[in-house]
Length: 105
Length: 124
Image 1 (cartoon, helix red, strand yellow):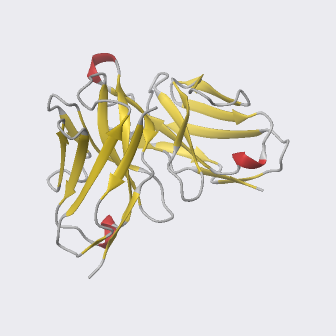
Image 2 (cartoon, chains in turn yellow, red):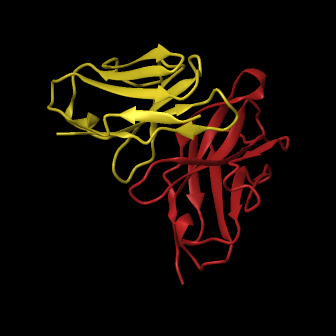
């Protein structure tokens, strides 16, 4: 299963809304997760089940979609949100990740 | 709070074997309900799943690495390990360990938490 994230780079400003896309080559129902990775750090789980926030994740992060088209929305960007975001499918026993979207100022 | 920490040599020569361990605290690797897995990230690139294992012995490997990779669990030390044989420069990467919850039909789910990562450089 191939995951394609767009855009590759998203230029934005604090306070703005950001929408990141993840398209999957075949249906994964709602078996999709989103991660945030900052430089020099491990990825952090944001969303699982396509739309469920992980523990401690602020409500400005929201996930949507099912089947093959998914989105991660950050309602109002804060300075700490500038990072790389990855989607991951777990519909199959073979785990795969998207190529990532970098959100920068 | 569950925490994972990778350890191992930072430099491996080409054709040799890469060996990494992941120590787990705050949870038992034999507690059930979770797979324990490895992910890698070449410098400046994306994430690639390598393998995962259940404490009872069930394993699954990325087909692109199958034949070179072995994952194992040591319940007595509450840690799990990765071995990758015949390494080349293409295996240079940050290696992360992570906990993967078990879903319906024993399928793997998402990774949470992750270790901080261990950079392995393959060079002579």
